[in-house]
Picture 1: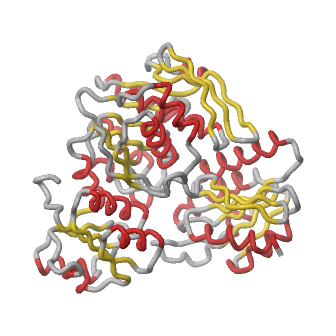
Picture 2: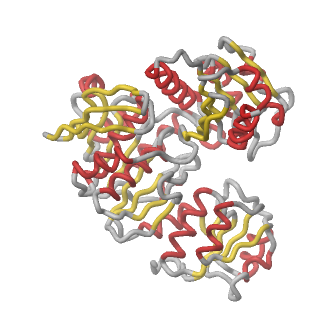
Length: 475
């Protein structure tokens, strides 16, 4: 624990969330008394209770004393919890300090070598790959990620090693609360403009993040992304130590950035992806169990970060080859009626494009003539309005697309705006706008045939449909 914040008794509002449940698990491992609340019971909540946390369903002032004594600090995600939350009000009345989840993560990382992954896309996958590789290399890092590792079923761990691996989220500029030793930037593409206002402000937050790297640390940038590479070039000029990773062609476009990991070749296979990667004078063959060139890039960044943190290259590569994914990242959910169903978190046009391209490459590698179908749920009205044409182009990469209504999350509905602003511009072979969530499984069943691949996709509750689609197909 640290002296700056008393973490002996911690109360987390929204404890069941992917980020909150992770830090709660680390606190429990470190011996803290952990209490919390969430709007509903869930698998993460039940797991935390089993680990010793006191968790209530529903928000009320009395929850602050679930463990008897009131907490020494209350943790909240301000983006998700309203100011009039009764537990926040009670904390203010009792004079209990309230901090953000990012502040807590910064406290937990203090004293460790901080290996942080930032970028618009690929943070969770890259972070997870680095964790798997470093674990295989015997480094036992602490980690906190935004998704559950398929192999271990957990999203956080208090390790015995020197390194702490985590995602650095830019959506609300919380990444500026960290001081990384190794900072990996996967890509930069304007997003979350409801917070930043302009693309320029969004780009600036990554420059500010790079300026927080320790004096003897490294900025690691993906050379295949023009904006990440440009960040690297700017930081080099400011005296930051920069290394790049990416394909040979991308490295040649940015000769001033030293190459830390060069992808000599890569291909999608029926079982995933195969890549040849050069780090220094060492050539490695890496087999990924997840398809897609974007995953090969993520893997190269993870390898380089693990190597900079002191990991043995051969062992890191073996761990990466054993990595079998993260929940909701091209996650296989089952087969019924000869149709395979996968689930993915993609909710930005670039992510949708990458996943559908990977799915296409996978079915083509299998050579069975299968089609790719997607069930997509747009996330946030602001994002849907901003990128409607881009979503239409991305989803048209599928042979068949079923588009659900917009998942508003923290936003209120916008009058006159529905997912039709996407489907009206689509050019896929088969397009269906399905406003009735409960009818989606039957809609999908009518569109697919034996051998096809179906993807449920989005950041909302569309993930619930994967099982229902399998059930409909089985009938």
